Length: 402
Image (cartoon, rainbow, N blue to C red; front, side, top):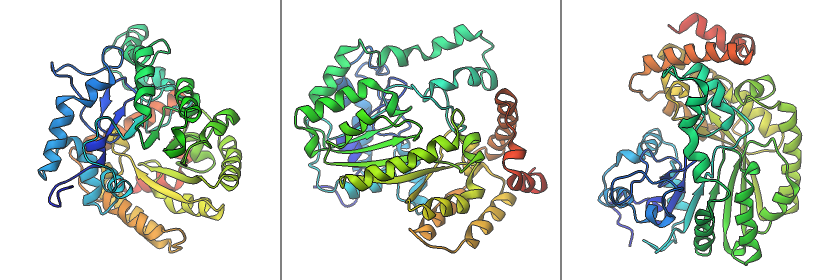
């Protein structure tokens, strides 16, 4: 029985996450990488999946939650719940209320199988996107190493998710038979051939008919073969990540143009219409760059018959809306509250975003300084212009923000 006085989390009890870096976590919002029984970090090029599942770190977090203790690993959920938002924990518990407790192997999997991506989004970093390597070295790296030496920092990613790491891929196939739900994230899932080899295997061996998938894609790639594989699962929830419209998209999700994604949205809508087991949603990752324009983004998407969902950035902290100066927050809040069309649940979602934005953030002034510095530096590297791309928001910042 799940204890009523506990902070039970289905992911902590029944799930495991394979992180882009080649390490292990409980879920995608976790702050603590799992260690083995010798206190060493688990990497897939040196460990087995079972080492992560039986990790003392995992047991420690699970035990703390069962005793009602807010473990620091789960701070992202505690922050979102404090803001009145559904957290990863509450959403998962509601979705998987019928899972048996403490299964012998994961019933829930979060797969981020490397950092191969075709975009370098402003809210991202090299560990999650291979397209960030050079820009990150130029704008953020403080070690003064040469570029070749700097690239060694990310070698564990390639080693862990190498196509020849047959132990990892074989272990995943073995575990897949007992998995009920899989989260598929990037980098960009549509570029991960080994991921779709595994999903194809699940379809061919009859497991997929009883499994649900959630796949988060940047929407820039349409692969007919991969789409056919996905239709073989019991239910597929597509989240297409769109953080801005038109030039705002091009700026934030650097590496592709809005016109490509805009066209692919029509294909995603057609797929969801054709196959009843496929549902389509648009995930808007709320950051300092787009929070002022959420009402406009919402209207555009809803007018196209799409359901938006607001996800908030926690890291990097300089892109988190909690770092925005209070004088600017108040005017952002005023603008967003002035939008009154409650189609598809605007009011509830925006209320929780505003609550989250108004929560204090440790060292907020430093993070805001870093936002201004890094934005200017990255503009130079990418030949972009924050002020010209976001003129209304830039004017607000110039007037009010220190």
